[in-house]
Length: 591
Image (tube, rainbow, N blue to C red):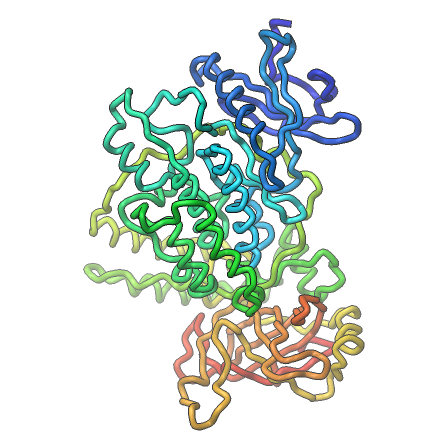
């Protein structure tokens, strides 16, 4: 039995009555398996060090401290320990811990896959700060609250996992470095300063406090609000550095409400006196935010889904056939556009490349990059898989730290200008490579999008419009719509109506509009999820789904009247000027 390697267990083998189903993941100090007992699933963590991780006795000591921490915690949003023991020998074997199996995704993957609204983010972090208050109330510090150490179940419930770095008041000191194990991105400014001053002092030990956990959870909130793909973002600088980061409101161009943005910045303030001292104080504003019901909180996702069409719903039949087919074709390696559309795109792209290269005059700063599409769209379908694949599951073990050393480097201005020029060229080159692919929309390439083709409206949408919404199709009866809710609507009172208030600049991409007035059974304010095309002399708009105030979503075929609205003076490639409100008609066939 002494030859057993805990990292080599196979499905079907047993650990003290727990049958191995599959390996979830491993780190420097342990390995985690999905196990089964009496028809129920659990996660089993075995403490075993790698050669490069140092003293195996310290690995065992860390596991015992993790057990001690978990024994003190009983909260629905904290991973629960069901059993622990030693295997294969009861005295000298490897320490194992049996935990809840969380069927879901890491917090970072949750952001990427569900496209949460500000309200959903506020609800989630309200629960997390409540769990953190529970931890601190029992003298437990997590010490590594990162995006990977928070899971979100398929029911949308967050769970704090991985207490391998945790500490409690009476625990023996195990840290053999100035800072405890953790994620540099989420270290507080006090911890960063301590590291800078003591990195070469082997005897220095940072006194971790509750405010460090609060800062780390606040850093997670900041990343959720500002990064649409936080799981894939690597080598990000510490948020506790010298320069404060831009606010979520600014980063998202207003998609994050100012109240939530200000609270996130409050949680990661550089001055510890400006931050909440206890988790309860950090939780209170979130209790207020979750009561807000406005569209800026519940109607739009924090991050837009940058693709040609809105994400396909769980019921594929509810999407227009053209959109559904396009979504399916995006997943096929052999998908291609028609030769005519590709040729047209190449001609336009050549003009764009010539213009961009001509503007790169030596000695002058390069032109700014085209702004990426910032159109919010709907939430994606619920989490699609009952079991996360092994590479997406987050084990309750410390992962090898890949973050860079803490630095405060300042780039040379000449290097910045050179890099900017390179970014312009790489943008053009990237767009050239993406011609005849829906990927050019995600890359923000201007001037190469084709106009939509005529298509029949799906039967399910026709039925929903006629029976549920009471709309008369192909009748010429119009609905007044706000083309893009992020641009606002026209002023309602003539004496306050300034000419410039009637117009907005629209970009090609996903869009969320709204009914400016009631339209049959659909009340004013009903959100309309669709897409805008700005190539040509008109702004073409199609809306695929209607989200009613009661949160019910129905498929529709609603398009801007007369094939779109005319562009106004001042329109530029990629930036079309048009009316904030326009007439739209319900149709049985896209024109």
